Length: 125
Image (cartoon, rainbow, N blue to C red):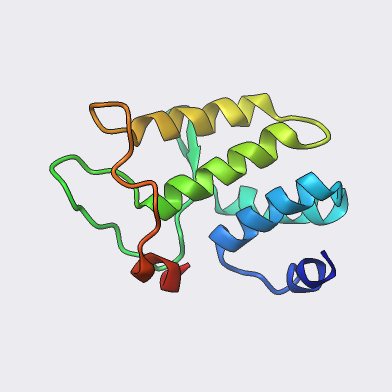
């Protein structure tokens, strides 16, 4: 936890911030959690009753006939959802908007294009 606390002041990537926010939520580190949640709120993409986050400078790619967000962004939104509903004061209004976005990322069969981040995406995270 000490390593995460020290690193949290310098983190700039939204994926990493989301993971840390959830970790701090679980650990009860509310000040650090709230600091990260504020930063993530500023980076949120909002519209049509949905909230999600995009990784910085990662161009969207289309790998099938229906466009869905990259798996890392689906994961990012899922960690944010967990942080939102697991915190000391669950924010169900925002949680619903994240769920709305996540549901739009499903393929016609109810699954997602990928549930695993590729090696290339890991390097970009």
